[in-house]
Picture 1 (cartoon, rainbow over the protein chains, first blue to last red):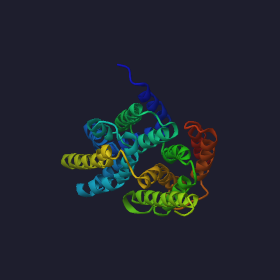
Picture 2 (picture 1 turned 45 degrees about the vertical axis):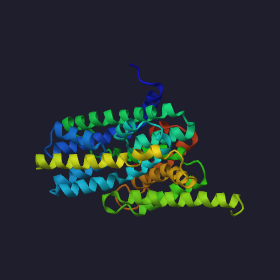
Picture 3 (picture 1 turned 30 degrees about the vertical axis):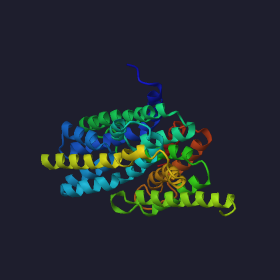
Picture 4 (picture 1 turned 90 degrees about the vertical axis):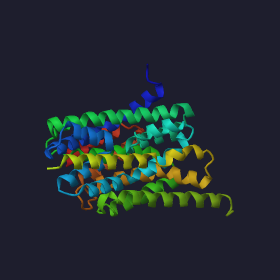
Length: 235
Length: 104
């Protein structure tokens, strides 16, 4: 059975972003090896949680002797930003039957969200193509993640320590940020969020990120709301 | 050494919790067929705000301290301009990543 064209389009759009995902997968796999874990454990992390930053944080905490509750709590706080992604997809996937919405939610990541939203807002595809596009993106990331974390476990961190590929991650998100800024309110949202994120970066469990995003969302919404009022002459 | 139990408990609890976070709003999306304009405005701000928050710390505080003049910041500037001009997802990375590696 051939994959729907929309799913293939979603997959293709996601491939360039794998540059940021692959090294991260190797980092996690190799960290798991350092902690004495095996393939089943890595598979459990990568399929069970399927969120790189939180997996790494949880693993580091456990390896450092922290209680499971601390690792779990930290992971959930780091992943709290996915509430925003879930909300952001609502207008686009509201039509999808409940069970498919529930199962495809599992694939939600920063990249799948960003790739899908940029595509949806740019091209406004018909309802029947949207889920396929998002799932194509999500599955591409999922499979890459499973494979690279397992490879990292076996071969360790292939990249020599003085070559820092971590910068690929923010660069990857930058390439998605640019097309997402389309007018003054979205520019303000991005600018405010960007500044707050840098200031709040030292906060534990990456809490700076959702805080920054909320600040940006608030300012962007205010900017758009007030600009409408001006246009309508203050009504 | 991490015990078996710790791994599985952590994975299960964090996994279920993360899934519920992902599901959250989508689970009631079918009731959102007629969202008020304010809600739509708020939702529209999520991608630029979320993405910006994922970009700036890694480029401006790569090693923890604020560093506005660094290989990462320069790479970000270059990649940003390329992304803006070419509307491509590949070229900014192809050009920006080597900038970060060569300058750093």
